[in-house]
Amino acid sequence: VQLQASGGGLVQAGGSLRLSCAASGLTFSSYEMGWFRQAPGQGREFVAGIRENGGGTYYTDSVKGRFTISRDDAKNTAYLQMNILAPEDTAVYLCAAGTATRGYRYFGQGTLVTVSS
Image (cartoon, rainbow, N blue to C red; front, side, top):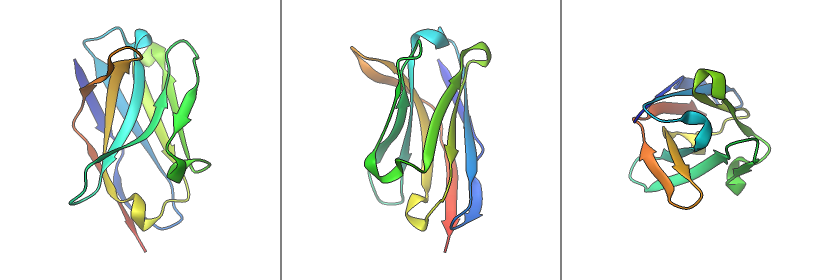
């Protein structure tokens, strides 16, 4: 299984970025997809998830109303639209794949998001 995240970069506070996660080596439509982040010196934090088969989305409280997760099963790709970015959103963002019964099993390499004040 390979999960390749892209789309990170440097943005000013209040700006937007769209992250992409291209997946291969798995039946993408059968997996729940998620985004995590890890800030310097901190542990990995869950950000957003989207269930398979239109099962819905869920977010950590700090990003609700600002971030939107989506997926395109035809392209084996998940997305994270991030709006109204703040310096505390600065982190390496990683995408993950999993199932409801076994949790997130696969993690890809991350993409760095830096938000300047």
